[in-house]
Amino acid sequence: MSELPLPVPSTPSPTLTYRDKLNITDFTINIPGSKVRQREDASTSSSGTSDKPRPRWDTLEFRLYGVVFLVVVPMMIWVPIRLSLPSHPNYYNFEYRLSEGWFGHKVDNSDAQYRTFRSNLTALLSLSSVYLATSSMFSRLVKPTPKQRLKLIAAFSTAMIVLLHGFSSLKILVILFLNYRLSKIRILNEGFLKKVWPGILIVLNMGVLFLNDRHQGYRFGELHAALGTFDKWEGMLPRWHISFNITMMRMVSFGIDYLWSNQNDIPNQEVSYYRKRVTTSLPSEDYNFINYLAYCLYPPLYIAGPIMTFNDFVWQTRNPTNIPVKAKISYGVRWAFSILTMESVLHTMYMVAIKDSKAWLGDSPAEMSMIGFWNLVIVWLKLLIPWRFFRLWALLDGMDPPENMIRCVANNYSTLGFWRSWHRSYNLWVVRYIYIPVGGSKNAVLATGLVFTFVALWHDLSFKLLAWGWLVSLFILPELVARKVFTEKSYGNNWWYRHVCAIGGVINVLLMMSANLVGFVLGLDGMKVLLNELTTTVSEKKRNGEG
Image 1: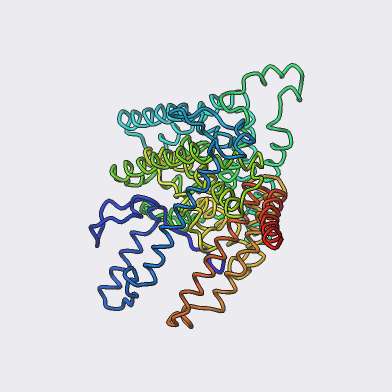
Image 2: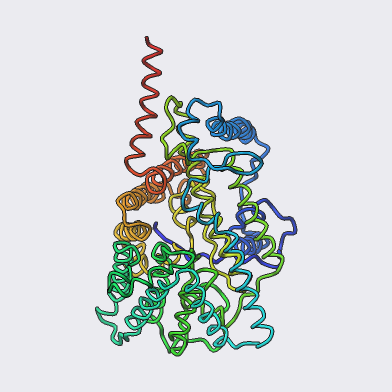
């Protein structure tokens, strides 16, 4: 993590300036900022300074890779399907976790997080339709100013959380108000207090998350028996505190953006570029409670993000981003294909059920590895699908939040790339409000450890997530060392350099998969069991062979 750049969000460009043909990434990941980089590459090439290597697709080396791909990838798909068949000896050990699915097939709907989204998708589509219709009619009939639009968002958001959380919405509003009053304390001098104030805001808000979790969202009846009646109407999502960590990040963003605001550095014209929107201060009157409420509870992004900074949110209401209709349709189609991919996996590969019931007795090392691998693919998809749904909702409303997932779980060959590409809006938030303030690349080891400790505790106040954070921090170090020792400038022209990078990439993928198996799938104990099963199976086979 020698440097963590601030990428540009993935608003597709309406025109392709130097190439007319689309490639596979335009229909899959559409890497943020790629159009900008392509234009820069084109200008470099036209100036005659480009020195790109010759494509290797027709070489013997890449043909061998193609053969390996055609053999190995189908095996990686067939192995989990075979493990999920009713004819498999372990099937009846996990069958009770399966549900009735499409076309007479069973479906593995046992993951609680994705099951919640899947079960409530119709309600979410209805809510998004009502909001978009209201916002569109208001824009057409009233021709609102940015201030009027923010008032509408604040009003709709308040009504929405009442619908979602019932009387618990009062708890949310009280927490928001207290944080607003704390954030509005003006730190005038440039001394020690102003330097540590962001840390104080973060620690206090983390404390709120801890209390929310400890008291399970609080009960009115605990304050007084007469108030117990208010606990009966809990809304559509009674456990409001589960998703409140996203709101907490917005609360902190407002406080720190206000702290760092510089009224002498406000541009006369509107701010249109992402980097500028994030770092450019707003007029002091824009740091008000209505804007704060609209930002923290903005309907498309309230439940799961992506996360925008306060500055970016308000600048976009003042100067809406021009998002082509074609780009919105394309993004919606890609989201629909993600849903179909997930449904195909859940109807044919019962990996979550197998993992949760530990139904792997007698499985080979290859089969055990595929159980872990496909569980990670499912984790990736179950995060990708809600994030893209909520981002699509925001795009249809004229807001352009960062894309959260810009790589697949299987192609994060760089630990730094993984950190930047998995929950990317969260990464941008952490870089802006934690990594850079504590020293950034000048203090990389401490900053990295602190960042991932925060990340782990923010996700879940549990030891397995803390272990995940420390493992990711530890696994980043080899890449940092390798980048210092094997620099492209010094060794890039050697024939072996590309292969050393490839070996490093394979090691990184395995390390990241191990860390994420610990953090999001198995936990430390489960990972120990998995490794033990792998090594025991190998040992037994050796003994049987020797015998």
